[in-house]
Length: 292
Image (cartoon, rainbow, N blue to C red; front, side):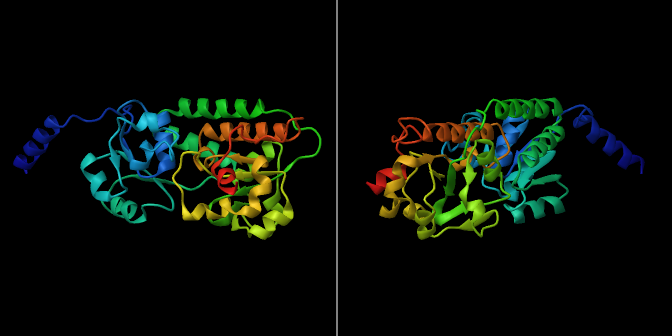
């Protein structure tokens, strides 16, 4: 027993205890948790993020992720790093998170926020677990101030529909729906028989004749079969009423949600401007180019 105690004491002397006030070392296994971790944590506190975090087409924090090691969501990549906390999405890397929990790692899973309040709650939660609650509070405050600066909505609201790859749209009770409402737009899909996420037939879009079509697209993204609907000739009449808004701007909890709302509000303002015949986004999006 004495020998065991001496061995334990010796091991403790070789591995200093982490002070109670030290902030946890973190690994992120999800693109949205990558963003929160890299925005809120201290330099060096984040041990690894997903490989997608470095992709500027998918990530809002590609510049911050440039010097951070990356992972592909595998438990065997996480274990050697010995993080104090693992951040993950509720619907991704399920096998990895289950294994990590069985091995005794603390895992915090975040779902997809469906309202701004849920997004704010996620920011505060992650900031608290990272040991920087004041940074989370500051981020939420800055977002609230940015939303408060949106132009006041007067008069009728233009109708808008979100058109995502494979014909998916965003209906009532979703985060995108709330951002459209704050921007002064009426979400046409909210009137259709869809709930949060659903598909729209091309005929429904043409028949509904929205004032604005919001395409979740990136100008520089490579062509995809999932985007084929966006190139259909039937959508050509909407090419001057289309806004290209990358999905990364209004999916994850973070300050880019306010930027997305500002872009939507600017598009709404242009719809009522005398020169409203020009493209809403100020540049032609990929769908408009393909419809010519």
